[in-house]
Amino acid sequence: MSPTSVRKHRMPVNDSGFYGDGRFGGAFVAPELKANLDELADAYYEAMADMNFMNEYRQLLRDYVGRPTPLYKAERMSCHYGTNIYLKREDLNHTGAHKINNAIAMGLLARRMGKRRVIAETGAGQHGVATATVCALLGLECTVFMGETDIRRQRHNVERMLMLGAGVKSVKAGTGTLTDAVNEALADWCRNRSEAFYLMGSAVGPHPYPEMVAEFQSVISEEIKAQVPVLTGKPLPDYVIACVGGGSNAAGAFFNFIDEPSVRLVAVEAAGLGVETCKHAATMTLGSEAVLHGSRTLVIKDNDGGVAEPYSISAGLDYPGVGPLQAWLAASGRTSVLSATDCEAIAAAYRLTRLEGIIPAMESSHALAALDKLQFNPDDVVVVNLSGRGDKDIDTFLSHKCTE
Ligand SMILES: *Cc1c(COP(=O)(O)O)cnc(C)c1O
Image (cartoon, rainbow, N blue to C red; front, side, top):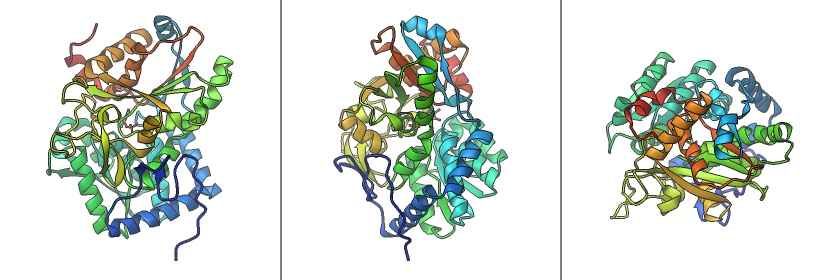
């Protein structure tokens, strides 16, 4: 007895989760998982139409996360680049990044569906921390799957998750990184479908996840759209720039501008040691179509046609695929795709830190690096989505010598 929920899509996606012309998206999963996803989709569309659900979400965004986040005019950066640079301060959110926006909404949805247990995967640990935080807030049991290698690399975030009461499951398969953690988490969800809720951390995976995550991050561009006219006197920004790992902060920053053709949307991915090397995570620049984690999207492949091991100095961008919305926006030409190397990102991080006193996350530093690759007019309004803060990355910044 499936409720006839109203499926209102606010983005270019159909009921089966395919984007644009249908090349990207969908739900390529085993039949048992499909049942979970159908149940989830019904609950999601119902919740979106429920004022009480949305009010509780909005209230927590305001009082718990600290929204709206400021749109800050970076004066010294503006001077440096000869234009008007505005930073969307997602770094000021509780837990230090945009991921909490989505985790809060999904936690509320889990509770609404009567699920006691939340499963998540994490690479850098940022999504694990956001999920563990929300589970503590809502009194839900939390299991976070994390690759063995990542656990070693991200000790501090593992400790935060443990303090928050989450169980951290070490995944030894494969290379012990994010891709392996996703596989284990999905398998666990399959085994425990009636009591568990899978809390996806980025706009990836099978439908309805990419649509849900983009929707729950869309508050970012909703706020930018309201803030730009007040701060600049212009109706719209000229540029919105965001980094892309799976594509959730970019989805949030672009969402309400997709239908505004005058706004140039710039997606920045990780070029690692360089797109000409095999050490990168430049999925949209170099990827080809394949199914990854239940979704048809752009994936970087190795010489045998398998999924390549991606590389970026930034753990949050170190993913071999990208969400289907970003794949479609790039393929259709709506976004311009740039990439930044490890060194370019680190240099951009030092620039922001020394000019504005803001230490950006390594991921966000890739978006900042795009400022050096674009040509601006003096009266342009350029918005950079500062997806997170760099406290977690200080050791990496200090131990790398590619500053100017
Ligand atoms: C996880 C993370 C990202 C990358 O994920 P998206 O889904 O592409 O946004 C970017 N910035 C920060 C600070 C992150 O923690």
